[in-house]
Length: 153
Image 1 (cartoon, helix red, strand yellow):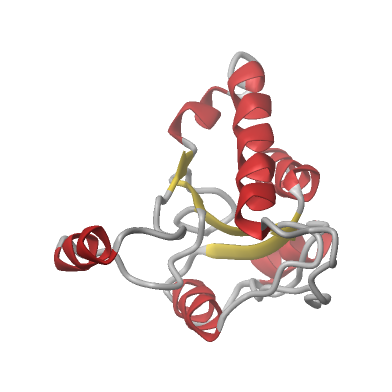
Image 2 (tube, rainbow, N blue to C red; image 1 turned 30 degrees about the vertical axis):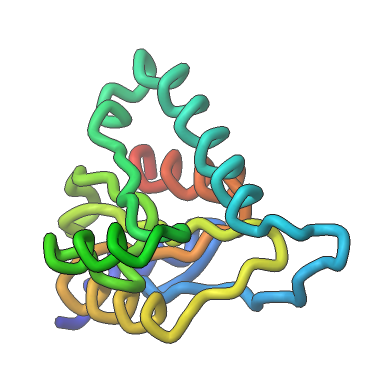
C-alpha cells in the first residue's frame, strides 16, 4: 500500500515521524535509571491521565487503550499469555479512530533513552503497510502531541 499525498502531508506535520515510519534514536540507559519499565509505565500513566481529562474536548479519546504486552511475568503466566495470543513487539497504545485515510493510530511509547526491539520495528512496519499511522514517541508529551495532531490536522 502506498500513502496518498494528504497522508504524507499529515505525517510530515506530526512531531514524531514522517511517512508512517517510526523515528527516534535510542540512547543508552542511564546508570541512575535502574527501573526502565517503571519509567515507561509512568509515561503511559501520564498519557492516559491527560486523555481522561481531555475526553470532553476530544470524545474519541475514550477509545484510546493500552496493549498489556510487555513487562516481566512469572514463566507460567508468560506461557499462558502466549497461548492466549500475546505477541512480542505489538505497539503499546492504539487509537481505533480513522483519520486522514488511516484506519487508526498505533504508538510505541518509550521513555527517554528507551530502545525499541526488532519485534517492535517489525510490527510498526507491518501495521504501517496495512494502512495505520504508526509512530514511536519518546515521552508522554510527544505521544499527546501526536494524538492531537492526528485527531485535529
